[in-house]
Structures are given as structure tokens and as C-alpha cells.
Image (cartoon, rainbow, N blue to C red):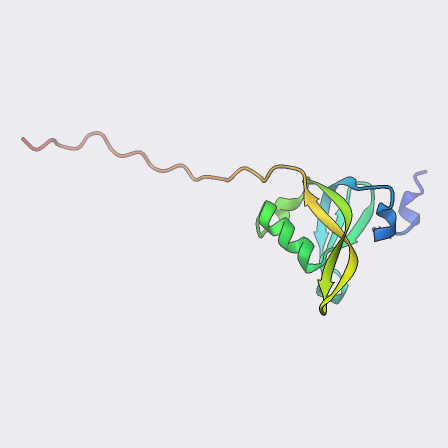
Length: 117
């Protein structure tokens, strides 16, 4: 029996990136505590997304979090400013290219118009 479901979720912390960045694939974005969404990854780990990370993902993949699913990202240790002070943070770097823009086919003009002579 796979016991990993009983281990609880592990939120990624800056200390977890001491050996360098990690690449992960997003599997879901869910509401979290403190008005921060939670990114869940294919390995079961999670990251509470701060405003900096949300802006990064918005810019890369658009405003709909459904479009972020299956995207590969790199998590790395960095700093963010909060209340004028630098704080160690886990930051997100998009790896997967943005999803293809869905274009609605435009109707073709009718070619049976009368030609005025």
C-alpha cells in the first residue's frame, strides 16, 4: 500500500532549496490561508504563493490558474521586500512556454458578391 498520502503535505521552505533550485510540475492551484493561493506539485509538495510569485505566473501563463496546470516551474531561493525589509523567500521561475493562444477562426468573406460594372 502506498503510504505517501498519510505523510501529510510538505510546504516548500527556503531551507529546502539549500542545495539549489528544484524543478516541479504544477498539478493544482487552490485557495490557501492568509489570502494566498497554494500551488500543489506532482511530487506532493506545496508552495504558498506570495504576491511576487503570483505576478510571475500571471505574466507567464495568464490570469486563469487553470492555464497554469501541467506547467513546469523552477523554485529557487531569493529575496522579496516586505514592509521595506528584505526577506528570504522561495521564488518561482517559469520553465514551460506559455500555453498557445486559442484563436477563434474568423469567417471567410463570401466570394459570390456581384461585381458592379
